[in-house]
Image 1: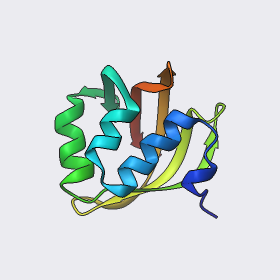
Image 2: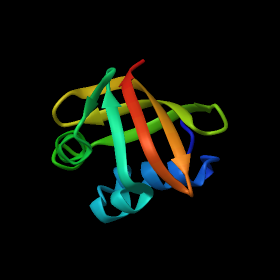
Image 3: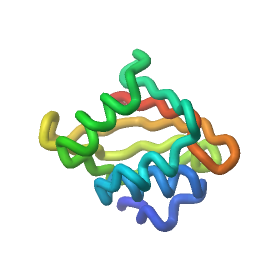
Image 4: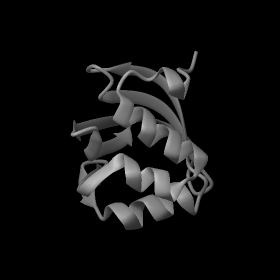
Length: 107
């Protein structure tokens, strides 16, 4: 059974997931610390370019199945118009209430 976004325990991760699912670029960037970085399937990517392609331009959506590591790691069904649906893992580094880095990949 999916976990409702509002019930995610880490506030910065909750803000990140809510922004992704609302397709809200402003809220997405507000959830990130300045200079935030990310990796997809083990390779560092340009965060703005990746988010544009994988989230906003392709209607990305996260359905969180499980959270662990005090809410800093998720397993989620992720779907978008480009790739369809896949089980993914997400790991977050948070400082000062903002996501400073996230890493995602297929679960």
